[in-house]
Length: 164
Image (cartoon, rainbow, N blue to C red; front, side, top):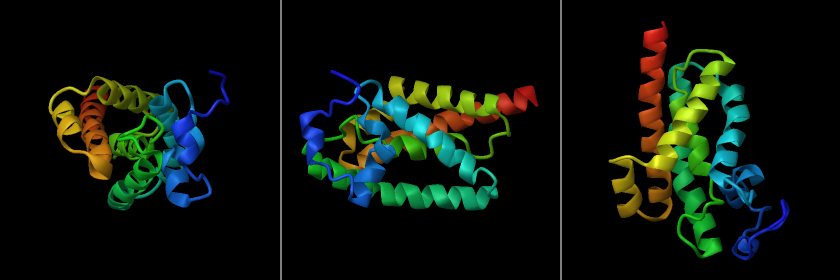
């Protein structure tokens, strides 16, 4: 599969449709290799754009992104006709954002957040795996990444405290 080959089921998406474009992380989820990782990489510039917000505003933006994400992910799932397709990466965008709540400034913290979030999102330790198996549709797509983000957030805050 070449870098620009689109999987047949993804041809059902309309990237001019705002929900579909957001669902695939502005196109990052269309990567044939590691779409979740690419979606998380695409989240970094978005994080940097809003990282100057106060913590309450940042969390409010994430809550809005999570709630909207249920509809965004469900719309893409309906179009693709497959549950939780790897190309749907809006959940990674929000999960990474959750990881970065109140993170210290600096590229090393962005890197740590990226690694920790991907680790929890890929490995899906309990209870992330429990939610991933039992909750489906747009909510299920969003929920396991929210919880992975919370696990990574906890680790980030521990690191920040220890390295204080």
